[in-house]
Length: 323
View 1: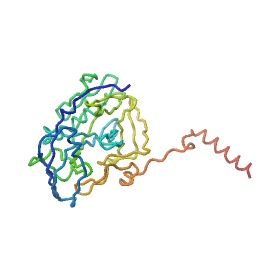
View 2: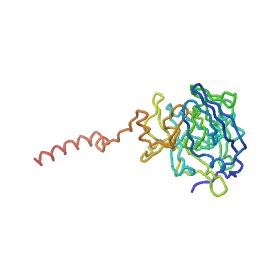
View 3: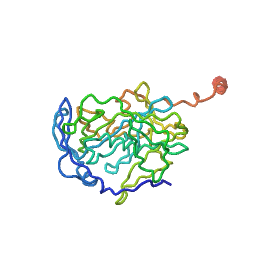
C-alpha cells in the first residue's frame, strides 16, 4: 500500500502572473497583477502565440522551475527523470524534477528548485533516508514527520555550468544562469537549472524513489509507493545521454521499459526562446539527439560459451539431414 507522507491545503499556494520581455541577448521577467492560487493559475495556462521567437513582450500565467539533475553514483553519472501523470494535460510523461515557483520566490527560483529536489527525489539506505546540502545550506526534510532521515552522510548538490544567455528578474541577474524558455501551450515561463548530486560513497544498498503531490479533493497529497519508484536514471557517457533507462533498488540497476514512452516538453526542440510542443515521443527524442536504442541480445548471444558450441553442432547436423 502507498504510504501517505504529507497533506497540504492547495489554497495556501500563491503565485503571480508575469510580464516577459525577450531579445536575442537575454530575457527578463517581472510580476504583474494580484497573487493567484493553484486553480486560478491553471485557468490562465492557455495557449499563446508569438510571432518572433527571439524578440517579444507578453504576459504569461506563471513561472515554473526544473532541474536537470546529474546524479553521480559509483563513479558514473546519470540524469534523473521522474514519472508524472499530469492531471491538467491528461497525459503521463517522464520529466525533469520540477514545480511551480511561489510568489515570494519569484526573484530566487533556485531556492524553489532545491526544495523540489528535497520533495521529489528520495534516497533510501537501510539506516534511513539521506538529507542533502547545497554548498553550505541544508536542504529541507519535508517528510520528517513520516520518514527517518539520517543526520550523517548527506548528499551534496553543486551547480554545473549555466546557460549562455542571461535571465533577469526585473534588474536582478539570476544565479547559476538557468536555461529559459516560454512554453506556448501553457503560457508559462520555464527555467531549467543544471545541478549535480553526489551520493556519499559510504551510502550502501541505495534505493531511489520519486514522490509527487497529487490533488485529491480539496487536498494536495504526497505518497510513497515502493512498488512504483517512478524515478529513473539515464546513464551518461562522456557527458552525453545514452538511450537507456533504469530504476535503482538496493544498489542494483533494473532496466526500465521505454515502450510508448513520452518525455515532457523540456526535451522537445527549442526555437529561440520558445517551445511549441506539449511532449515528445522517446523514439523521436532519440533521433533528435542522434542516439539509437541498444540492441536487445538475441537468445543465442545470451547463451554460455559451452551451450553455444553444443547448439552450433546440432544446427548444422539438422540442416544436413534435411538435405
